[in-house]
Image (tube, rainbow over all chains, first blue to last red):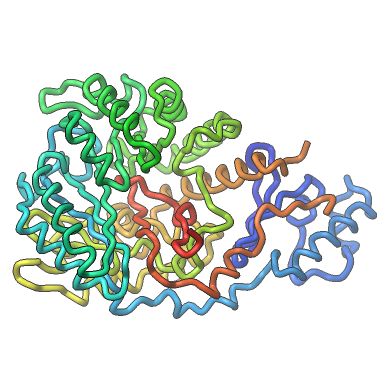
Length: 453
Length: 47
């Protein structure tokens, strides 16, 4: 399977199975779009007839170049080298936790998926005892995996900062004994940041995700306090100070765009240029069509055009890392990883303040997806196995999609929330993902100097 | 080549030979977790 597309004025062919990416001139691009594999040794007359605007000898020259790529297994490669059983995971180690330390929040963001922080289960904070059990649980379940990821999440995790700190201290204290290496992430709205905890985060957190939607008018419409006031003026100086002290550790200024700011490219540029955050991510609000803020199918063309506009603004700005336009075509994850999906419910689980275990944070509070409880020592294998069966070959829409090895099948929770089925991808999410990938690859092509003059 | 330039070779196919160690970062795709395309993560073995 190949995918050909035009983006940022580039003509590109992606060979899905091999992972090869080619940048073509217009003639070879038009020719490739007329090719039905297997390719003959020479350009057939009936193909040349479809392209009367080009000289036959020149088309033959293009044909030979394409044929060379076929022979090098970089074009029209079959997926036969892939064994679908590679995607089947059984008794996989759990090695990543979303630790919901706070089912409470000091903001009332209008698009919040977690019922303004409480997840619909009542406001509460996680005790250290529960967090310790979670760490012991992941160590026990992680088998031979060395790297363990723990994401402090909420609600607003800084409302349970004491638990976070004790958890880090405990995990570090058992690293040597267990042979594990913990990597912590803090996802925060910034309201409670001060000099002391910024210093702490910059020492202990491998990654900090800083929630900010962009321009003041956009942020303050969505990210408001319980009293309805905007948060921009409170959080921006704190985020800037934290980032200034972060050195080369990872961080992202991370926002959400909704149907009310489809001009989100301006928000990305605001955060990058006016606020100085060079690692920026903005994500679409996703949900059912009746969700008043979620991007609708009708808005997809407009959002795609905005992505292309953003790509044009970023193509000559390698100093800005826009999360979704970063794609590693050389040293990304192996094909086996890409088949398997996000790992929710098998290598990744979410733990609530009560010690309940869910496949991921998005399922928290839904009793149908509760896997178990740390205190009861329960773990429902049936639910976990349902998620083990989710991969790009078991989902029909994914199997035939050219982007399957780049998104790895998308978000099971998003699928469930939109379509009521973890196996049925969300059309909006998929279309936006494909467009972002096209932009990302085109940016790479231009930066590599391969675009047609 | 004159008409076609290769930006990336058959890296995906080659990765099958050494893949599957499971040490790489979990790749949550959810919008609220700064979802990433799986491809934008690093292979732990390439570090």
